[in-house]
Image (cartoon, rainbow, N blue to C red; front, top):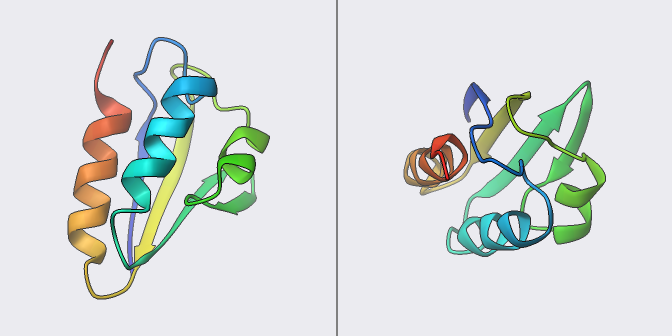
Length: 85
């Protein structure tokens, strides 16, 4: 398992459209991917799970991946979250 704590740099956070794109990106990988915020952990491949965290801009989250392509999944999703729009 690989894990990384990071700050969300997206202007709108992971709300609506960015959340949908994030989930779509997470689903490209066979590894299990999770997001954690304030002690709540959800499946990052679930739009409802991601939206339930209500992740805003500049909030700190933990991204976790476990599986055969865990490092690629983590790197790709980190890049997505940390990009400024």
